[in-house]
Length: 244
Ligand code: SAM
Image (cartoon, rainbow, N blue to C red; front, side, top):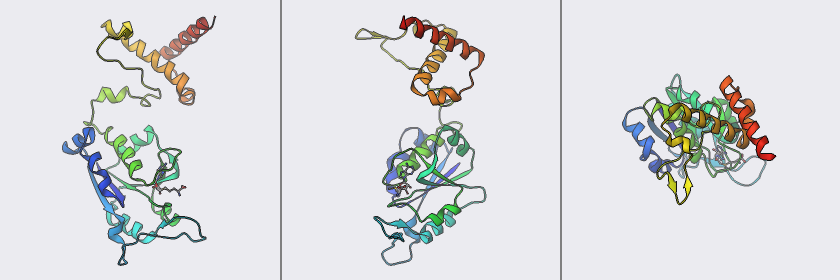
């Protein structure tokens, strides 16, 4: 897979690309990440990429010409182009899976007050990573690139990806490691039992419990299978008993 990031600040990505799973995915040849700096497409002496907004108001707006020339310089036949803006569709794990299937993903980072709205019709999607405003799209593009790269076959162990939060529509169960007893705070007994089936059931039940209390929106969308429905009845009974 190839990911191209259009940005005014390629230097922000140095640590991101040279660390942990991302560095490993690059060294294994699973992904290449390249950058285009909008400023290299500015025509004036000061390499301006922005100008003041029509209609007045604070801040500067990124201009069509350098942004679209930069984009056109890297477009490929089957590329998928996303533009980062707080006004876009909210990003999630299902979108990460979609993006991981593309050969070439192009991500446009905005800065200042954002981009001239005429640029929007030249991209496939406007995407937001959440309901808050960042200074620029660079951190948002790292969030997207990271979540996509870890889904590429060979990036991480397949089963550790399958169990992760959001993969099956639920939040992940709580995890524990050594020691089994930390200053009197003990790991749930079942995890020390060596009984894989019991551990699997316990984890599924904890996942259901957690999702139901922390993310009722996710829980409402999740189609319970027979086993899950049985576990939810158990959870409800336990809650009722605790109230008495
Ligand atoms: N004036 C814009 C608004 O109110 O919607 C905010 C512009 S923001 C300061 C500058 C750039 O940061 C945006 O063009 C976008 O690329 C990026 N950005 C900021 N918040 C973001 C978010 N939640 N998701 C994705 N990109 C974001």
